[in-house]
Image 1 (spheres, rainbow, N blue to C red):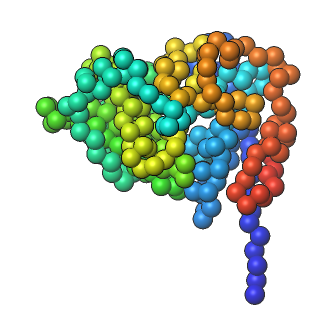
Image 2 (image 1 turned 180 degrees about the horizontal axis):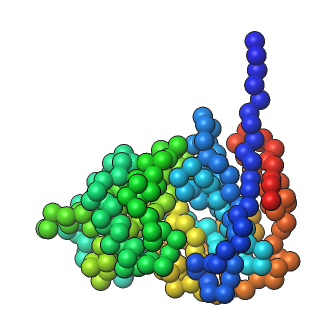
Length: 275
């Protein structure tokens, strides 16, 4: 009988490029491919270590002179609604949720374009066409859903979120909404609804992506109770956001080889890194 050994994921580092969150900073990412029969296990494992998914790639910030980007998640058991969040739920009581398989539609893409043109006209996705949008939604080797939000009064799609189902929670990969509904705090509402979905499914966490102290784009995440951030190779409760200074000394970050060596992989396979 022939036996084959599992192939350990290979890790790579992107070239430095301007940071989209903090002006004057440069970013780089540590990443690995997500493919094959072990894709779901790898996604589950690395998500718990601060990684995020983009199509068939898992990545984590690995900047040489900054450690401001911190993966954030909500502990569902410790989450409680604030007064303002209760008002958000009341404002959006007319919305209907529909979770579907990850299949891109023209209606989703039109909403996505409106959202980008209004909120991220100069971002990395600004030039994304319908085929690239479809790839973002559909090229997933793990269990994913598109969670749509429709205005029942007008009968139109006004929000959507590409969501991964992990073994310990929901990961909000990318969400977008109609900017005309900004006064209804749709972004916040979709997070609140995902907390409810996770609670109904008995899943302990909702992963929100990266929280970046000092970034207006990401600051809203600190307003959710029960928030944890991945810092110092462990999840810790976010108490005072001011405790996490966006300015870090270059020597505070571990070398790439050491970062890779500290990554836990499913089945305890040894990791290997390449710069």
